[in-house]
Length: 440
Ligand SMILES: Cc1cc2nc3c(=O)[nH]c(=O)nc-3n(C[C@H](O)[C@H](O)[C@H](O)COP(=O)(O)OP(=O)(O)OC[C@H]3O[C@@H](n4cnc5c(N)ncnc54)[C@H](O)[C@@H]3O)c2cc1C
Image 1 (cartoon, rainbow, N blue to C red):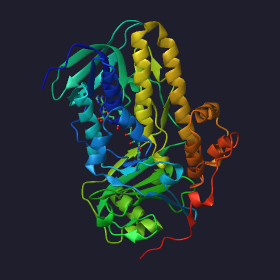
Image 2: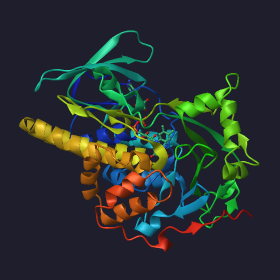
Image 3: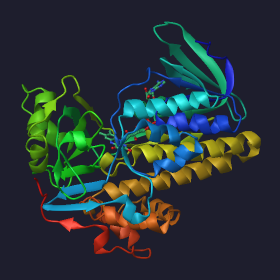
Image 4: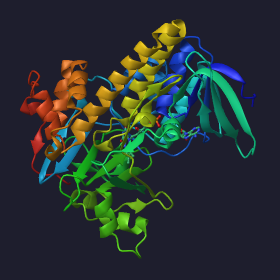
């Protein structure tokens, strides 16, 4: 392996989807980019449901063909069971000709990272960034890292640092600008099953081996007795099915007996969710696959500053209910690379470009936040940002969001927002409501 250089134009922290794409875009613009990733890919990661918006960012990074060639499961749409009603939708009805995917994130993220290397990024894995010494405006930044088990610290100086370190949010933690979102104090538990049945677009249950020929739906369900907040996911992958639960931390901690392990609590709860129970009837849990995370929803008081841009989850994360984490990370990668290119070409434009980046990112995050909040939180002081962000979306995307907002009781706030805009042209055929799942 070559040595980490002492200097470059841009250092990217983290090789998840956001970091790999930001590094690729900057390298395509002929900047000297170094990406430092703490782990060795392929590494496990939650978040396998990828909505089709991601393709445009992968096209720009020239990686779409590799993703298609991998043969990930192509999904038929989404199905949601909430408060006794089951609703389903398909992206095709909104003009998306390319498929949404169910991906094994270890492999998906590895493809993006390898592509970054192929496009000229100097990628170093098993290198953990410890922090950044920021210079004054116009000066360089010094990124401090530790490689593998090496006890000594190394340094690399650069003009800009892009922090894409995900939930670890290296720079935000260093600067103390990470604020937990009190409206979203959740815990998520998940694991993987073999031989789970899945639901096709016709509402029929299929055995897992058909998933590549007969596209599955991503199935989400409210968890009984958790009001608007608790829900579960069921995402068929090529070999296994990802199943997860999301519950408010308070409910989770009080409902689990002290002596019960989190894993056994997770398995018990899965079988309490009616349709999930039937899908998992003959499934086997994959030992060692259980994982959990809590308090993953937070905002940042700042997403760009002298010498840095924060992207992906490192710039904030709201809630996975609408599966927009990965595309949002990719979008922020694109905007950051655009802004950095302009700043490097014209250092006098720094403030202006950082302000533009900030407003775009904040708008998108507030928009996704408003989509995930139940009605009780409708008056959100930040809704103006979300309104502005909506103006940047295409009518078909707005229409899609309008429909998605009717699938659960988590989006009244969002419906208030689009109420001020032209009404989406939603017809019943675009989101067919069915009364029951038609098991074979
Ligand atoms: C429970 C749950 C379910 C989700 N489900 C979905 C879903 O279905 N669909 C979806 O689109 N999104 C989903 N998400 C969100 C999605 O996983 C994230 O938004 C997405 O992974 C963000 O990508 P990223 O590149 O910003 O960060 P990550 O993918 O987390 O990548 C960050 C990288 O930085 C590296 N790193 C961390 N610290 C350091 C360091 N100090 N030095 C060097 N490298 C470092 C990590 O090893 C990692 O590889 C879900 C999130 C949660 C919590």
